[in-house]
Image (cartoon, one colour):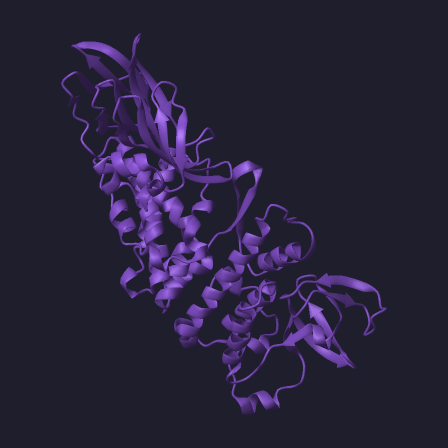
Length: 489
């Protein structure tokens, strides 16, 4: 079972399945055990004896003798012996049925946060004690699911803002996990924070086992976590990574899942599909995306409180990409014409012509959606969707004043790009205002707003968290926006 099985319970007796009768005839020692709680290893069976080492919960030991309330143990990793109180050591069962007993203990440890180190030790002990048939069956799948879950819980705790990786219980858990062969990576996150991520080996093995649908969906969601993606990956690396994520997500049949697990799977599929659509469009290939279809399959009434953040993020990614793959043919509005022209170094340049003459021009490396262009009734303002980055779409406004046409850019937020959309939602009659919908998550903040904006200075006159609370959105919102934008969810 690869590296984490090579470092399991030290005693050879735990590696062989024997009958109860044979187990009764075995000598009392040596026995295999796990440290049940962080404990000092003493040089003698007294609490005042010299400290040999500090043992972390879940470490494997060989028990060689007993005296009073203490076990005499040997730590193979440190190559050192000592004494531990009996209440600080969990004896591993022997004989027929040992694997079932260990699995029961593992289920209990899984329900208790803070017992991750012990849980990893129990998982390794189960792998050591189980028969090949048990490892290939539901028990083996449950063990791999538990191991991955324990590893993720340790990684999430290590990613907290105030976490100190080299101190206290967290350091002990990380050390125990490393001894069982688990690997973690560190990824840069927002505001200088570090995200610690488990490499997912147990979850990969779970997908090749007799896992239940719920176990499988937990595994694929863990393997495709967006917060564990390398932000410094190149464009090619990002696309290859997203293609792999998409393949992993297809290994679970959504139809076999309970509603809340199905929602989580569809949210992740929609997000990955939107990222791949942007990569295809950026490369100049035909866009083939199922992002909107996957997102449409989500049942909002079945979302749990914990899913709301992921739901919002999926909506922003899908919304940002929804114009990708639409026609890039020139648009003729009669009074003005809009067309794309190649620019320098691969840029795309939008040209607006009035009376046959070039009136405004702006270039971008992003994806310009001419199909999204909308001219107001007065013919003095035009809105256009442009996506410069994956998950981030801007609103370009072509505005005519006394000096001619000018171009203004409305980003989702005045912040470093994260996830977000700023989109045209309708024209207010009179030619002085437009409706804008914005949603973003950037620099640790999340916001969704519906706004009435002046064309003269792009000032927000009125805004609300819900479009139904603004009369302007009730009367003048664009029908295509009302029917197609995920921001109205």
